[in-house]
Image (cartoon, rainbow, N blue to C red; front, top):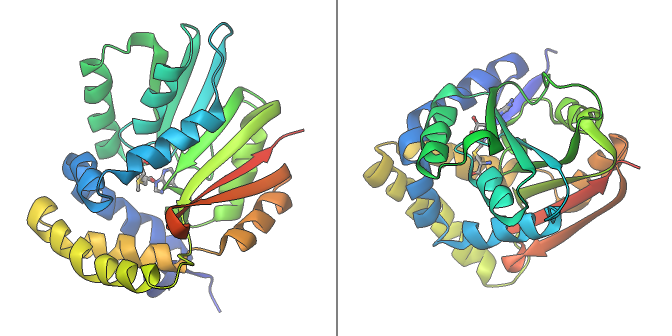
Amino acid sequence: MADTAHFGSRQVPLEDKQALVDDVFHSVARRYDLMNDLMSLGLHRAWKNALVMAVNPPKNLPFALLDIAGGTGDVAFRVIGKGGAATRATVCDINAAMLDVGRERAAALSLGAAVTFAEANAEALPFADKSFDAVTIAFGIRNVPRIDQALAEAFRVLKIGGRFLCLEFSTVDVPGLDRLYDFYSFNVIPTLGRVVAGDAESYRYLVESIRRFPSPQAFAAMLRAAGFARVSFQSMTGGIVALHSGWRL
Ligand code: SAM
């Protein structure tokens, strides 16, 4: 049987998934940041701040970050804000519409040469081996068809001693919160998507893709299989999100 992948709750041929995902983000790019605030009630800011704290860019040394599936640049801009004058971030994303919004935001923030944008697939990164001090991916990995290839690529471009951090939706494990979360996810979010972004379907995909993502324990095993050491994860907000970490040692 040909390889398949989850696209939300559907099984699709593996080679079809990326184009379907690209349509979703092409459709929502202009409203993406507003929708993030509305859908997460602003919580995505706290989750991203936890990621940036873990990246911990130094104030007085050069530091190179690669943010994979970086979209409109949110994580990269936050790392640049926390780091010193020699902090550089590369935002890599497969979707030109998301990167266009990111470039506009970077210009409005006058980030200049601190940030660069690269249109590329997480499964085949156009960067040299061992070229980044840290590699991040926030709410991106579940969209990638071949997760093991993307993890291998993240490992390859990380310097020895560098850290990989992945923020992703996870498994809600608080009784009561799980039912509330289900109701919110399957009713409120698609409605918000329809009203604000004119696209309920894309937001239904996003919710369904969250449910299909491996448990944090299973994802930690995938990080180890990719070669990462000292693999750990931290659940946040009752398990809505987990911050995964691994080192290249
Ligand atoms: N990291 C950003 C954030 O947290 O705001 C954006 C996250 S958005 C939910 C997911 C992003 O993953 C989209 O911008 C999409 O284009 C990107 N993406 C999907 N598949 C990808 C791939 N194979 N390689 C690189 N980026 C990909």
